[in-house]
Length: 188
Image 1 (spheres, rainbow, N blue to C red):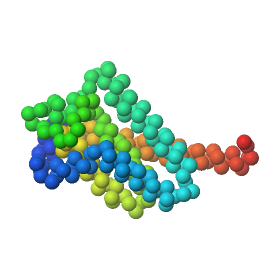
Image 2 (image 1 turned 90 degrees about the vertical axis):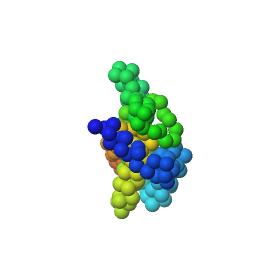
Image 3 (image 1 turned 180 degrees about the horizontal axis):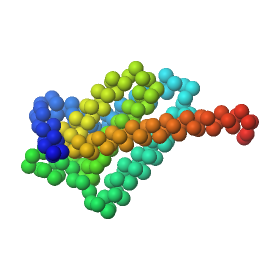
Image 4 (image 1 turned 30 degrees about the vertical axis):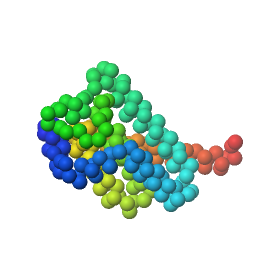
C-alpha cells in the first residue's frame, strides 16, 4: 500500500514547477537558513528564555543524533538491514528528485528536524501554528514526491521530531526551575 501512495505522490506534477519547489524545500541549505531564522525570531521575541532555549536546543541535537542518526540509521540497520529508499527499491516506477541519499529511509530525518523546529515555533508563538502545519505538510509531500521516503518514514520522523521538541522544552523548563531553586537557596 505504501508504495502505491509514494508512486502517486511522486508522479504528481512531474517535470513541472512542483518538482522545483519540492526540491527547494528539501535542500539542506534552505533548511539551515529556515531553522536559523526560526531561532533568531524566537530569541528576539523571548529574551528571558534564552538560556532555557539553549538547553532545549542541546537536548534536541543530542536526541536527534542519538536516536535518528545513530540509533535507527546505524545500530538498528545492523540488525534488521536498511530499508531501501523508494527510488532504490522501485527504480522503474519512482523518479528520484534531488540528492539521492543511500542510507536507510526509515525514519525521515528531514521530518524529525522539521517537526522539532515547528514544535519550538508553535510552543513559543502559538499564533504561527497554521504556518507550521503548512510547512510540515509541504516537507512531508516533498520527501515522498522526491522519492526519498514512504508514508511510514514520514509519520515516524514527524512523531520523533515532536517528541524531541517536547523533551527539549521540558529539559529547558527543569533547568530553569533548578537555577531558580539554586538562587533562592543561595547555593553556588
